Length: 217
Image (tube, rainbow, N blue to C red; front, top):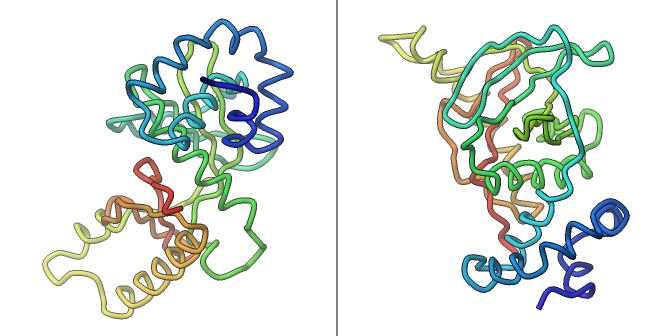
């Protein structure tokens, strides 16, 4: 049975208070579906936390003037300026997996709470600005913009000789340092590949796409 004690155990204080203040009626009306979902489909409390978090996402609209730059299997990528800073907006497709979205958002929020300016490892991790749900119901995540290209694109450009040795060493070191931060928070990325590593114009490798992340706790 889903109780207040269970919700307090699987949500942090801010999430729980937000749930109580903004969604008391919704959660009460969803009690039986939530219990059924828990019994039939959820392997862990972590999955339940992600499911409940999806119910309380704040409203979030795409800023005017945003530019669509790419479309992937899960989301459209838009580039925009918010509060004077360039951001990347992942505007998830209607059939995107909401649990995958919540895993990524939850993991990056967790990492963001530990972020310190200039600290090794964090420079190679994406910076989540905010997340929510658009008026049409689609999920939205906003990140600090990384001006660069993927290692996959770099490999294509460098054919047939491949990446220069000094660049391979730099990328390997920076990604390994980022992973040490991720693993230090008891998280596993689980999707390391050239497409998920961006090389910025400043020469910083950034590990992206945390949609398959899992807790190791």
